[in-house]
Image 1 (cartoon, one colour):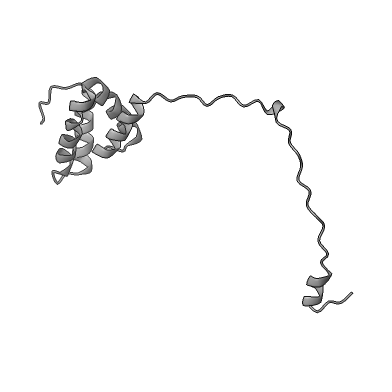
Image 2 (cartoon, helix red, strand yellow):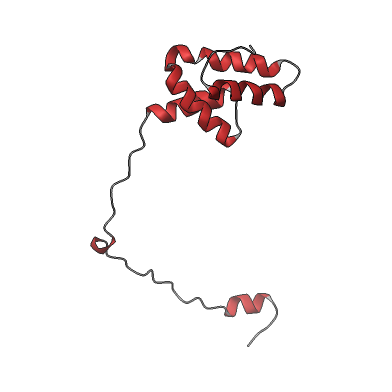
Length: 108
């Protein structure tokens, strides 16, 4: 694993995981992340790893989520023209509070 011939982001991801999980779980998680290369390709996986490292959230599930975000381009919502909306102020009826005062023992 130390001589992993991939782009630098892969080496940084492995180093991050090894530091966070020195018991060997970091290497296992890195291998789960590498398995995502089959469906995403090395370049896309590298982009997702860059984002994951930036957020300091390196796990196979998080990287898979980032890959989905990269594949589905974000669409801007349509512009809302507020001038076309007629805003009507709600009317709130005034309540007679005499009954509440009677409950409290204060009779006017």
